[in-house]
Image (tube, rainbow, N blue to C red):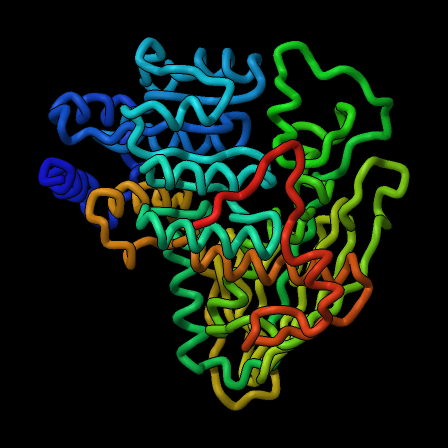
Length: 443
């Protein structure tokens, strides 16, 4: 442990506290790694390397003293491609082991921590198994594919006392923090409504196509895992898994956990009192999807309302932005998204609160990964930017919106019992049913 703490001190001095990881190029990091002793190294394995898992791996590979030692994917074509891509990151592929089953990777005693970049329906199971195997975890969002999974993941982290960072990387960007500080300063006046929206013109589901055999090299049975057994269909696979309830929750859990997170943070909000939702498959009725491509959800809190508004196939969202959070106060409205933030003054207000647009100057994924690594070394859990407890909170709120939509009911939440007041809803939606012999471990 002393050598690992020494690594933290070395890394902190190299990164200069606020210095961005991305500010140093890959070759510079490779040179720095040569001067870090073997006892100060952190070995990471990555499970799921086709999308964000690869982005997360890339960020981790830039950090001095971090070694990518294992990658896992159920698709051999993806594994082979990523092994070739490692050279671009100055990672020696000869030192990287490959796996098609994450359990075998977790058995590797040389792996200190894992990154989980799989589809959502695998997050809870792999995270809990990884903690039990003694690994620290960086898990892609959303943490769980149901409220029950979120709770189980929090319990596992507490039981095993492992570092669990969730990939809501906006929490590591300075402009998001600055905007929340401004919201909480009171300068906007009484905030009655928070609007959160996600208009994604480029996103669309796959076409309706016949079922087929899985592509060569894909372990489709392993890909399904705890999800219901279904014949392979290409429009349910790869990126499109997002649009099916078996595996995910549509835009609400894909982007919603990023954006609702800041709606909740800005207002210091607990779980809402009631939730109602309306939407449907309005944009692409002839394409293959189950989750709504258009959704409006109303969350009721004690002193304000929060509105979620999402639409696939449209970019022209509120305030001429395709995504964002708007805190609407008596004195002005603060508009925040990944591009920056600004305050628009309320015309009738006597208080001058307008602020010009503040643009982004940092890379969230790199900073988020650096935060994860530093906490692995320090074991100061309170320093994590997005611990699993916080991620479970916002994922629960996102799941509530989906449950309100799917049930067609206005839902009420009992904060004392942490359940909906309608027991039929709890029975049907609170916990995801597991299939194919898989079960969440009890902790």
